[in-house]
Image (cartoon, rainbow, N blue to C red; front, side, top):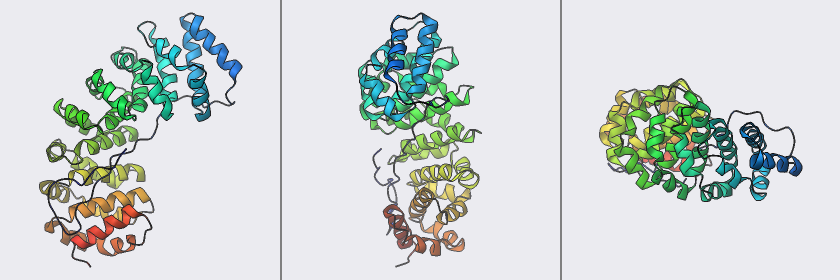
Length: 359
């Protein structure tokens, strides 16, 4: 994703900086990786079953293709040898297990950048959105996973939204299945990078639903929820207020304290994005957000350093935050980060120190 501009609101010597939009890792179905390389004879046999087999044979063949498509080289070769169109045809209403298996194969194929576009061009998005309403869990999960990968592509974001995907994915945020919720939140995270989608997601009332997911016991759900809130709040003061009003600050502070480094970084990035408003800065301070940020400055995890220093830079735009940062020992850690060798970290640290009156 691109890099967002600085959060609006407030000013300071070092400024608030721009919290970058959240990048999303590709996710695939929980299947066993293939033990052999792509074999054209096996592939051709499976495609024959896709074309002429009965429902059971089609489902089996699609599942085998799903496993084959876990390999990045196979993703390219399968697409080159005509896998996409027949799989997309299997998404049409019929046997839900056939649909689920075909969507699972497309989910893995969509990890490839060129395949994202080709799958959408083959007409996959509308039936995948329809599958989100399926009563069969496997169909919902595979469709949500495929859309999560497809939504990384800029043009696909608009197609998914135009096909009713935002409403369907929002529905799944309240699903009982944690894996389904994770993929739905992940797709919304990517969709929220698009400005028009941001407006639609916010207007439909998604922020409170996404905020609830921060308290999930599943790290993937928490991570995708934090990323979605971040992308919705970047450069939008109204969204920043909505995220804070939905109760996001306390669970985000908790994630910065108790989770893995990757998830800590995601939470800090979201804190950074909502700290564009001065009233939110006070809320973050009152929620105990400063000590975990200072601790993250000392992390060996580069993304933790980058997002924490960005949040500190933004928070120190308000004078009332600076005494606590000084008392918790932020200044020497920021000075160390000036020599980190990473441009984002260095810029954020320098900005924070300038805001705090250090020259």
